[in-house]
Each structure stands twice: as structure tokens, then as C-alpha cells.
Image (cartoon, rainbow, N blue to C red; front, side, top):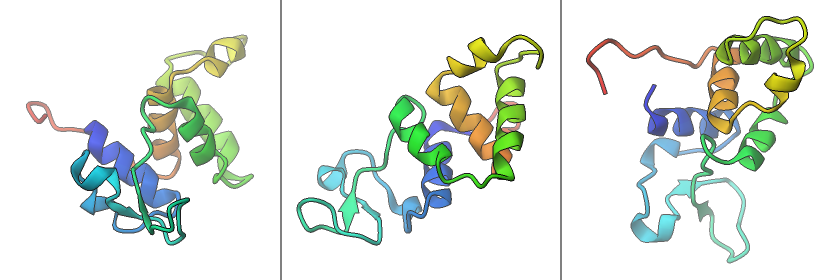
Length: 118
């Protein structure tokens, strides 16, 4: 998946609407509807940078159900290419991009790119 597609998929999974209308930087970055007003009273705000911001991924991960959490943990170990035993410390330090991929795989939203596609 492209980084943009990942960000949009995570945003939609977290309750954002019209996430596919996101445009980088245009209109002050207020191109996504959140369904609630931001501090300026607007219904739009910039899409979180899930692939580079651990805080944004923490918020996304908090939407997982108790049944999804063990699946997420397994996916995170897989994305980090770690065996399950004795590597928890390394998994805890996974990057935001690794967490984003594991999150999308947990929800069945990850789409493998074809060879030769950007």
C-alpha cells in the first residue's frame, strides 16, 4: 500500500469520514471531516501522520477491541519479522510505520502492491 492509502485506511477505521478527499496541504490541511468540531469550530482537520507519529498510532490502536489486540500483537511481531519468544522489548519499540501496517493487517485492510506499481 502507498503511504497515502495507508493513512486514509487508518483514518476511516478510526471513524473519519470523507478520508479519500484528503489533499496534502491544500486549504490549510483541513480536508477531512471528523464529525466533530475542532478547536476553531471547524468540522475539518488535517489527517494524522500515522506512519511517522507514534502518538497518532497510539490513538488508532486504542480503537482495537479486546479480541483484536492479540491479533494486532501477532501481526506486529510478523511485520517486525520477529519470532514470538523473547522479543517483546523489540516489538515495543516498533516504528509508527510498522504499527500502521500491523493495524491494517489486523483489520483486514492491508492491500499488497503488485510488482511494478508505485
